[in-house]
Amino acid sequence: MRAFDVMSAPAVTVSPQTTIEEVAEHGFAALPVVGDNGELVGLVSGEDLLREQLRARRSGSWTR
Image (cartoon, rainbow, N blue to C red; front, top):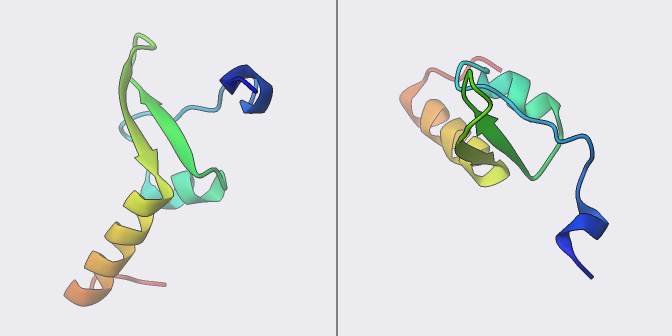
């Protein structure tokens, strides 16, 4: 099996300005983050979202 066999097409991407809430709505384990020119600038994962949620809860800034 190859990556092609399990990938989403077309690719779902987010921008660096996408909010964490918007990223979570996509329901993917990870999403590529692309800049204005379509270049890959990073990857945001479900683990990243959980880490941020825990940090926000500990600091008292989590609103949900």
